[in-house]
Amino acid sequence: MVTPSHGRPEWLTGDPADLLKDVLDSGEKAVLIYGPPRTGKTRILDVVLKGKHKEHIQIHNGWGYSELILGLKPRMSEGWEYREGPLLKAIRGRQEVVVLEEINRTDFSQAIGEIFSLIEPAYRGEEHALTLHDGSELYVPQDTLFLFTMNTLDRSTENIDDALFGRMAAVEFPPRVEVLTEMLEAAKVPRAQQWREFFAAVQSHHPLGHGYFATLTKSVDPFVYYRTRIRPVLQKHLAGYRDDDLRMLDEKFNDLFE
Image (cartoon, rainbow, N blue to C red):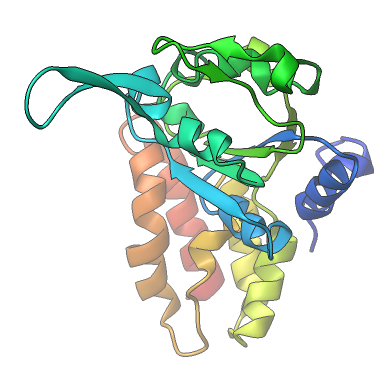
């Protein structure tokens, strides 16, 4: 069983991990990795960045320019002073790779301020340095690699605008039955075909990541796993306004595993 193409060209359904490696090998210096939760976005970073000096920055809800780049903060004694945020520190520290996780948790284009334009190769280097609010200068080194991750399902977060998309390459990480198959085989999970069929059925109603099945083992009761690991996620997204879809998936699971 393979991830369905839904009539799309075959090259659109290949392994996104391979595509990401090709993009990085081509010399791209700013890459967005996007998709639903539990589709391997963070895991692939550990693979492609092995051995590299990197800085991981987890974006928090509502973070703005003052948290990420530069902000006025109160001194311990009295008065105020400018303090660098983690992204500014990473750039000035000449980190080889800067990873920003879950950038859709805030208005990212606004939060990164001057760096919005400096991530493009044409605007990097000392000759394109900009002056910040504290009077200091900032430029992005030519060899700094930015990697961003984005959760496409979190409805409480911000959208990424087209102008930012235009400044980076983007690689989608969708749910993939091929990865699910590898996990099931590695764990020697019984009734693997039924799990694959159910996973495929779910995709018609909700893009559930294959990572939600990662803790399946050969001794797990399928119904316990479904009720405690899978159904709560589906219920969160379907219950209340797509109850028929949730009921249909419950019946599908029951038919496959009863």
